[in-house]
Length: 114
Length: 114
View (cartoon, each protein chain N blue to C red):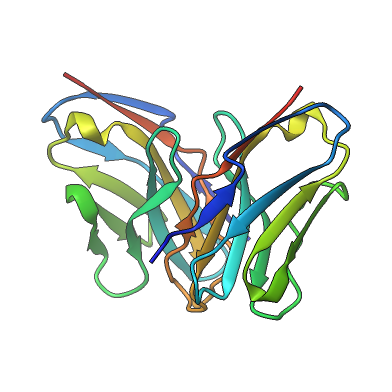
């Protein structure tokens, strides 16, 4: 079947605008993760969804960031009032609900805030 | 909490030479360990993982890694590299038994020279 898909692949926005990034996980995967990859850096955890449980938002850098997951499938990451430091690649991953299970990554959305 | 240190940000090596990419971690709980590879403009792909059992794990593309609990290390090795191995490599740690988010190192850029 299809892998994790993300849209858009690239997004250029002006400082202060809101953006929405979308993630379609692999069908049947109950766990979904958002990470941020800044230039020359590793992956920074943002948020984790597991089934119908309350998400772990502990990695969100500010209250301008939010995410939701509808129907246990598609997820949207929203960044309000974007800042230049938000420029990064935003990666989504999904996995089965098993410890040690592989996280399958999407190709990412490259966000540039001008 | 966990942390991961990848000691080398860049590793240049000639084709057909052996390579070792170093990874050290710290954790207050038992861990799972992973190596992911990222080719340019692509998402991350799992190379190999250690969950339990044998400390020497083999992955795709001829890579292997050895879990050393006393030295808290999980170094990645390949006896003979190819040009096509040029990519960014990330070491990651997760809490054993958990499907929660991974903690990633900052990455090692492997460049294979002709």
